[in-house]
Amino acid sequence: MTTESSLADVYDVEQFRMLGKELIDALADHLGDLQNKKAHKVYPDNAPDEEFQFWKESLGITSEPIQTLKTILQRSQQTQHPKYMGHQTAAPAPISALTGLVTNMINNSTGVYEMGPVSNAMERVITDFTAKKIGYGSSSSGIMTSGGSLANLTALLAARKDKAPHNVWEEGHNKKLAVLVSAEAHYCIDRAARILGLGDKGIIKVPVDSNFKIRTDLLPCYLEKAKADGLHVFCIIGCAGSTATGSYDDLKELSKFSEAHNLWLHVDGAHGGAVVFSEKYRNRAKGIEKADSVAIDFHKMLMTPVLNTALVFKEGNKVYHTFAQRAQYLWDSPETEEWYNSAKRTFECSKPFLSAQVYLILKTHGMGIFEKNVNQLYDSAKTLSELVSEKSSFQLVHEPESNIVNFRYAPHKNMSISELNTLNTDIRKKIVASGNFYIVQTTIADQRTLRCTVMNPLTSKSDFIELLNEIEKQGSFILNKTTLLA
Ligand SMILES: *Cc1c(COP(=O)(O)O)cnc(C)c1O
Image (cartoon, rainbow, N blue to C red; front, top):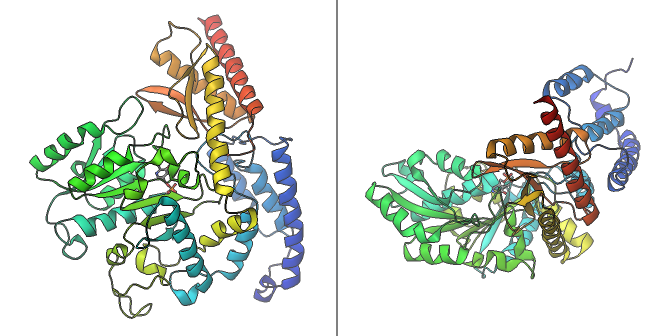
């Protein structure tokens, strides 16, 4: 029987030292096994109830906590595996695991300077650095926040404060407000707009063209229609890029339109805003520097663990008014611009020490490391799309503009859309269950696609070749079985 700890035991230094050394070795072994594709499924594919039972039954004191941590390693989604090509989550730079040890130990909560002197200072360094890469001038400034969803919500609040005809923050709603956004925008934009109280009518979804970009030619008529319906549009949101296909909206056109109509332009660059770090690919987001605000997730293309987002404003002072409020115990005057009390500008009060993650990656691996990563991932996706195009039994759904590639297995010309949808869904299930790869699916214009996001710079061309071969194998196996049964 293991005995319960005293509170003094909890803080025992030598136990910490011993466990820590053991853990680092376990983590390094695990990472090595994944990189060498040894013995690990990319995704363990346990059913939710099974996983719940496992952890429920295993709760209780142990003398070997490292064993429990190893079990977490084994049973998790392996984002460090080169054959992980699923959702847009980084294969974090291993230095970030070490950074996390330190930030978790010091537990500086960032919101006010005295609770996070280093974190507030570093946050300014990182957001200034990002602002410069965006192409913003000296009046810009930004904040870091827990995720793109929260960053987008914060940006829409700032937009409303700046552009709405009355002060909703103080007076509540008395005129119907609306935002314009691409039909392909991430669902968190819709959610943010609803949280702002805009309702169904206040979220105006503009159709996209054949390249999944917002139809800028339709904007004047959508704006006119909104006015005729008694809505005041205050903001337009550009995707850089969109979630399903990674397509970039024409930000230059959006900025012209927003300037002409006195709208706030927010760029949701949660995923693809990272191109600002790349000379080769930054033209994908041409015009981004004209936006009033830009959100970029470091935890997608930029190698940090979740969640880690920069929200940068062209006119940095505007965001201070967004959350204008008295909090006597934290700061004296709500309106003064104190960059070092970051809670003045964020929804979050306590906030993790996010900037250290970005800072340490740059410090350890060089200021060009983000550029290398973005270029590698975008180049890789191009390679995958070329391999798909070369195979007559596959259909490429779009030329990739980023590291997202959608395609489907379609071996016979006479298959209906619903047959193809079922076939591709079944193929994905088999692939995921095998544990050999992890890929996801989506639906574009009612058609199911297999969706790969190349997130790991160690993923190679041979991994793609193997993936496509396996899809073909599973696909023809499923088709043969169905023919036999029919
Ligand atoms: C991932 C993503 C989001 C949501 O960001 P989180 O950091 O997951 O909250 C929003 N927009 C786009 C385009 C995204 O790719």
